[in-house]
Image 1: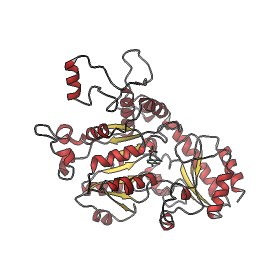
Image 2: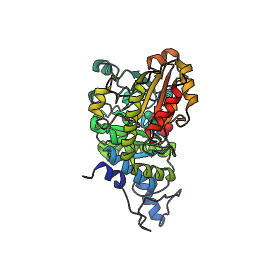
Image 3: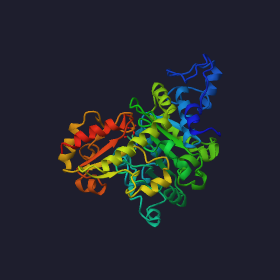
Image 4: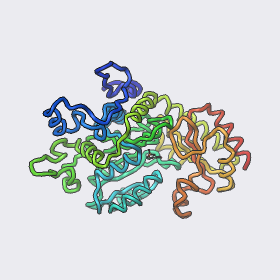
Length: 424
Ligand SMILES: Cc1ncc(COP(=O)(O)O)c(C=O)c1O
């Protein structure tokens, strides 16, 4: 495929509707698909995945969105899920069983950490968090025969502490485990983790991919490159035959074994994305590059303005030259460091309360990647269950406010922040 990103976000994976010739992918709002006759039903059940059976397993609207996102990420295939959390859960459950271990970077979306430390730990999975900047030797020392993946995010929020994905990819290869990257905040327009050594990419499509704050969703993208058979004992679910006479996923699909296995797992657990949501997701992806370009330009402008404001102690945005991650962002994210930033106001928690309560245009809300600019005091909400010590170690100061910069006229957002900051 030689088309550019903008062409592919509109056309990749499209299938022109055979019946009416609809130009835009229709919503196939159906639970199931008609079997022509007895033998057709037998055939469809025998070759699950190629012909449609039931919408928990596959749906034509979803299939187009899956092919489109896989193409934009440079992956071999993708699986839509009902939310970003479901994408993470499906990925981890496909790779690891009770007693297995996942090694993750310590700066992650708090909901992911809650899932890891809470319900997945309850099922016997073991999670370990390590500073992304720890030396290679420390990372490798944490890998055991039961380690099944390294998990990270390409742009963690709210701190913008961008990990060196190329280096983590190298560590994962040496350890013989896949690198899983949550690429939600970067989007494939700004960063494609597979080009930097990732094996599996996940997104909350609720954010910039959908882009309008209208719909929850998630996706798992497989690079199709990991050699599961070279790690046969580590991934028996992929490399061993499930029943006598039945080939293993790796025998059947080679390095592409992960995705069909994840599809069967999703079919069992049922975190299906509704076709109407896949339709809205496709509408969002049509304009992804345009939106992200503007999100980034607005974020850069607002970050620079905040950085110069006397009521602001500091700004966490890797697009700012003084930021500790600026050089890495320039290398990994030449088109911009995303559009989520955090700023610490003077006056601690009370200062933050004053600013949050005074906002008139900016929305008080927990979400990112919306067309609207959203603000939240994460210390008293998203990070409220952590101890003060944990918050300090993550850089969540009492006066820290997260901003997901939207697509309004930036001067209007700045004017709103200005009147709010003036009250401190
Ligand atoms: C980086 C990241 N990953 C995953 C998720 C979870 O996605 P969802 O809310 O779609 O379940 C979020 C949600 O905020 C997120 O910010």
